[in-house]
Length: 181
Image (cartoon, rainbow, N blue to C red):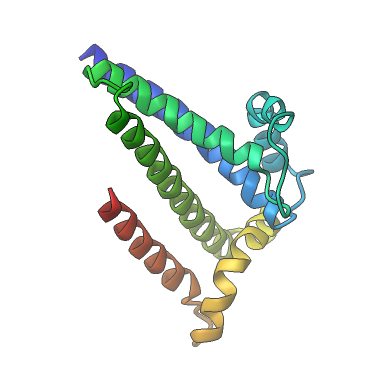
């Protein structure tokens, strides 16, 4: 019971840190403004991990590799702790590579979940609060995903099916990632 509680708390904290780092990467990649409350929260929440890593890991083609490394290391630490609690020998080569592979797949899955959340939130905001202060940010974050789908299926009768198509495609990506495990 105590191990389950620890796994829940540690998994939640790790997922939040990882998602914040991934959102920071996505916002930087799209050059989204960080002057809004969401951007300020992401920067404040992740600076403790990203800033020290930036001294060691430079950026590459506009991609903040320090944020990628922080997100990946968070997943590695989580799976290392969980494997240690389960009594798995991590120091064996097979265990080490399994840890690295599992952390990488978990990072990719969380990134897909983040993209799904952004698309769903942008769609909901467009229906119920199109002029909310956070709406332009989420529209900008979802636009690179939605625009190709809008070229394939235009707005029909005032209904935009692009978010549905994108979420379905992201679900397919999740299935592929799950089968790679």
